[in-house]
Amino acid sequence: MTFDFEIASCGCEGCLNQGAVALANTTPTQCFYDDLPGCVGAAGASQHSFPAPSEPGTYFFHFTRMWNFSCAEVQNQPIGGAPRFAAICVAP
Image (cartoon, rainbow, N blue to C red):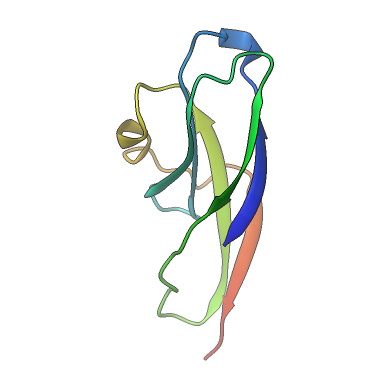
């Protein structure tokens, strides 16, 4: 999957921000951003690979932004209720 992103942090300009993506109801395994965007913001492109689920169905990708010290901390926080931005369909 490849996507473009924009991120700003006007509420906490000195805070490290992490942007993460995962399949719904799983914990993130990949960050697409880990830096200080400030209120000016940052933008970029990101590319990630995910293993396809083994069961047929439609699976949604969610993203989230968090304020932590590193992406390692994001990987312990499920993001199932975060906004959806992509889907994959696994055929039977």
